[in-house]
Length: 166
Image 1: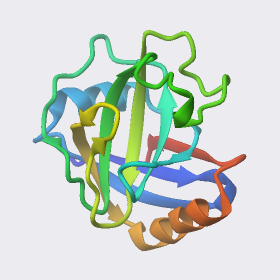
Image 2: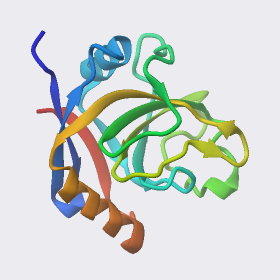
Image 3: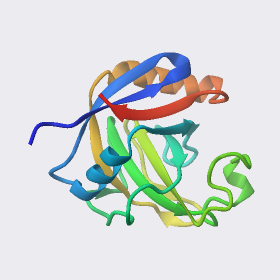
Image 4: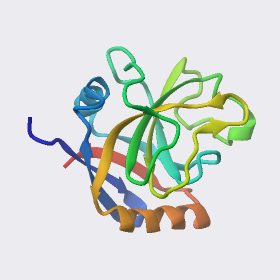
């Protein structure tokens, strides 16, 4: 099988990187994401995991993927898939606005990019939060990491994170 590549971009900052799907490690998740592309929306910078940006999208898989290729310690360049219920994200402390795309939904999908080291997927409210590693950045991570740091320092308002076929 030929490598499947996707482009991950921060539109407002004009930055993109290329990632390879990990079909050999997370085939069900990779197929679900690939079939649903393009995907994206407002970008958020993680509060708990440290060096993570993500977007929340409605569920798109025929059924939610199993926890294949799981991690709680993602490394730079990892693309992760998480599933949350609306009640898991409903606490005001998360800071989501009513238009964040998950309000009133039973389930929401979190597509994330980890751009630097020392990440730990633990949430003070719920404990460990394992994610499915379904892709890895193969080109442009340094530029994307700089943009992510700028997003952390300058804010995410008006910025979007998009995943599309390369």
